[in-house]
Length: 65
Image 1 (cartoon, one colour):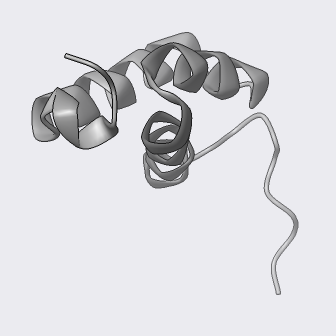
Image 2: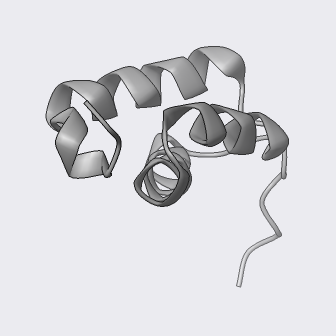
């Protein structure tokens, strides 16, 4: 197998999965905190969250309207 990935670099797919899972489980604010904890670049986190928000109705995230 190849060399281990640089932990500072993360693909949009991986970021999307991590942030989506956090949003689904904990909600938007916690997802942002978790994404920052994972050292995702803030611009990438915001892009992933924006994409997820446009794809998922808020009630599908288990949050109060």
